Length: 187
Image (cartoon, rainbow, N blue to C red; front, side):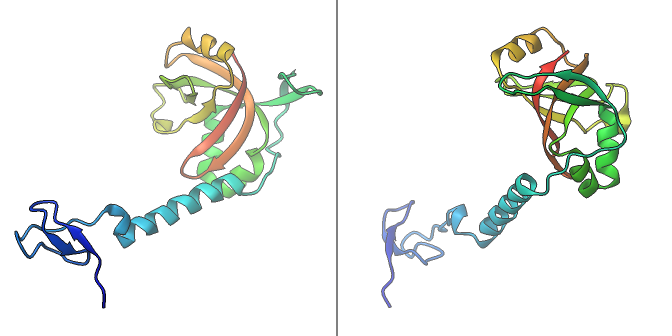
């Protein structure tokens, strides 16, 4: 059987790639993380979660909420009706039944009222959460993707924990990652 050879990182001696320690100096040979079985299992689990969250069913129902306003984002031909929700209503729906929440909200145009909880320093997203003193929803927020420079400029003038209303389309819903929204406008 032919063994491949490599050099010891400590002494430079030629050693077999299957050696656990260098026969010359006794240094332990560390395998790259990509050679460990558990690394690949973790990669498969993460990939399955991402693919499952991105490709799972599309629904656009919701409860008997009435559209709050009609706007026309750039690039569309027909006006869009946004259904108004307090951000805690979304969190409660997700906690109650993630599969139903996905069916009800994914693909829906919504107007979400809450508080600005995170502003990404690169200007890629913000997060909308419950009131800062509402400890029931302390670790929950809606991830809102910023679409353009006009939105970035608006956000530059808002502080975290400020009341905010965002309008847009919910693009994904998941029990771990929560809600993701592509923003059309901010108030």
